[in-house]
Length: 270
Ligand code: KMH
Ligand code: ZN
Image (cartoon, rainbow, N blue to C red; front, top):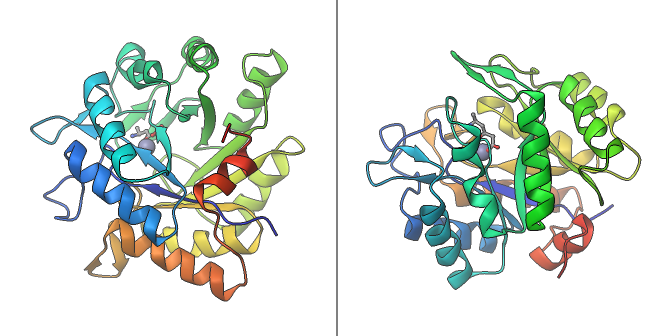
């Protein structure tokens, strides 16, 4: 089997320091958390940034600082969010793409997101795809429900996204596809030949979906963006969540990819 790519979703937009003291918030903390996740076995850091008050932000300068802090410390693949937080405009969300990170997320559909709506109309999706192509950024299709895979394939048919395709299935967001084995198999079944995929289970589904992802030959995303707990009632750190996936993979005799191997698997320049 391919080496396992572990993505560390370090920060997100929905959780706060009130929820957990372990959340990295400043660019330095994000850099440090990425370096520790890399040590523990992660090869991609999926990042959001926060402003001085700890609120979610898509500010280009904050991303520039966070990327600098990560790069000072390690060679992990940096994947910026273009999802940002519910309610942000397309202009706001696109800012970090102009910094030409190696990867960025691209959600290919609108979905209810707990009490909000994560709004991604067709015109915005095309615009995001074209901007990523313009800046040479590889999209990770961020799939919250089945129909989004079809829209991603449409972008490829139209030539707006080219190259090896990578999908991340985010499962268990209230409003999106539930987390579970049969749903995961159905999603995998929709993918174009040769695609790579990873799975991110939300909350208590993070652990079982990770185990499934490893066993099925896919890749895995964990981190505080998606889940705050190591086990019921016990808050986790990003490092602990990554290290656990690395240990499970090792028990299943699946090697973990270092960033250079992950670049090769994903078709990124080394
Ligand atoms: N915060 C969510 C509304 C992404 O990073 O691209 C969207 C999200 C997806 O987190
Ligand atoms: Zn995110």
